[in-house]
Length: 472
Image (cartoon, rainbow, N blue to C red; front, side):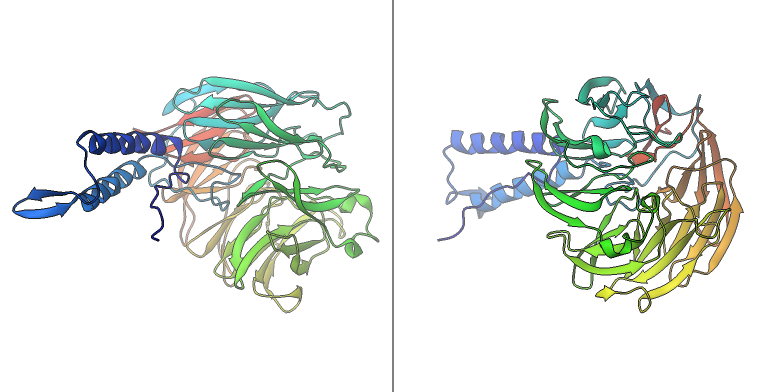
């Protein structure tokens, strides 16, 4: 028996699926009204055309028409592909406090998490300055109006944080119908984006962050993957995203921590999932070492040791290579610096020596994650040195300097790279063999969150406001 045909619209966003569903129902109603059957024919230019083919053509046209619309989303920290790349073909170049503003909205609380976008909603996490209240905020993409504030956690015990951190620094992640918010040791929750109710929450995944949480959650198939790496415990855990129940939990290799002081065991990274060596790999550059895990089971695949802590920058992937940050090298005393490693992704066991391709330790950022464009790595140091490296060799292509300090990660969009300084200035740089500054845009306020760039707009969070800019 032939399988029953069906139309799967689960992969479409709401603005795609709703018109498609309406037209599908309308076509079905018309066929029923005129008592058409799939075996019927109609006459056109002396030829008989099966209703099967006519109906299939109409559905094909409908899918093409509605799936080609402006439906780009921004679902994770550093974008939907977690690589700092935007799919938009045209992004604002010249914008600022009085230029190209679509809207600006004051945001309650103190937080450095980045915005995520799905359909007509923008989601942020936030918290009070003392951490006694942690909440999520949903805004309307078109107007910037606050749709809902959802209280999530009110912890009874609050850890100290670093003066430059906040109690809502991890960026949420979002998909159709659900946004996932994470506040480190204080809890993780799934929230309905239609009813705004909390679907599930976990408050039992704990660690001592020492300086506050910063690692963002990642959606992988039916899993929500979290990193909790503190001075006391260090583990990676995957939750069933539908229920919040633990799917797997893997402790970091404890032999690397037993002789290390607790202060050097913490990390704040967000992982990536890549295709490598014939399988999916979850790349986690935590304290002391980078480990590749099977994202479906948590089983370790390989490890690379570098022996430092407080890793923040995300790993990168390009052409069979993984690029990782070591965190601050403090063992040699001030001034502290970070190392950057290029590793061959194909390997098993300890790959520290055999799979190292190159390394660099000059002007390597600790907090901002670099971005790779056309085989070149573009990075900005926390203190403003901007560098372009050849991804395959580590050769320095060029170096320059931007004013200010930097926490936000650069984003590539519309042919340019966007560097956002803590002092509220967004620099637009053209990628290439030489440093080319295209624009310098003063926003005001302080920027620590990484911007979302989509649908010809850039969405920027400062310490007090959320902005949407678009050039016309």
